[in-house]
Amino acid sequence: MERVSTEALSAFAVFAEHLNLTKAAAALHISQPSLHAKLAALARQLDRALYERVGRRLVLTPEGEAVARFARDRDERLHRFLDELHDLPTTRPIVLAAGHSAYLHILGEVIRSTLAARPGSLRLMHTHRHQMLSAIRTGRAHLGVATLDTLPDDLEHVPVATYGSVLLCPTGHPLAERDSVTLADLAGAELVVPPPARPLRVTLEKALRDAGVAWTVAVEAEGWPLTVHFAALGVGLAVVAGCIEPAPGLVAVPIDDLVGVTYHATHRPGALDDPRVAALLTAILDHTAGSGAGRPRKIRTSGTPAT
Image (tube, rainbow, N blue to C red):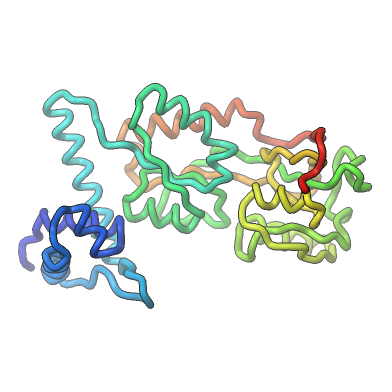
């Protein structure tokens, strides 16, 4: 096997970030043909295809993901070594990947305090769970936070918060007067639900099926904010995590017999060897430990419903 070019590895790490030859070449300040030649040489040296075209998109092959991860780890270790050698503070930011629900309801205070103490020390990626897992695997992110229907064996996971499930219903709805409800109370209901295959949708459908409860889809909504908005418009009832604040005109009623929603922090094996990643995870765990996660209480908001 030919000797692997470290310059080509660094170029591939940038390409893997953009998955676009033009953008990656611009970021590297080289021509597109020059970048293409470096990537071709690297693939030849490794005797593996590193990316392929799927439709109009370029995607990494499994071997390409492994090479991208190695290249990013190598660059990061080199920067950390040089910073330590010259007794300089580490300037490369920790990358945190999460979806809007985690950012809105779990990570906000941690992000604020981290950036206040060390400006520029944190970079954020807005992802859904599959994108988060891909970012962790390829080394584009150090730490991810999301709800997961399964826990991949190749990554490490730490539960950071579990919230009981609640039913959002209008203040005038018969169930709004209850201190809690059960799945049987949802018989015949029209529900605002996530798209198919989302963790909550899978859990909710199975639980309702096991309980013998018939229901219908009022609308499929992506994300908690839109789900709450549809419920406030009167489109249907909604089952959400207990960390979600109901909109004006809605009541959040705990559901007794539905499992809660657990958010996990995910990272690659060995990631916590970096003290900055370990410190960020500790900060998240410390924050959620005092956030009141657990069985929800009934919440009634004042104000008028959305129009």
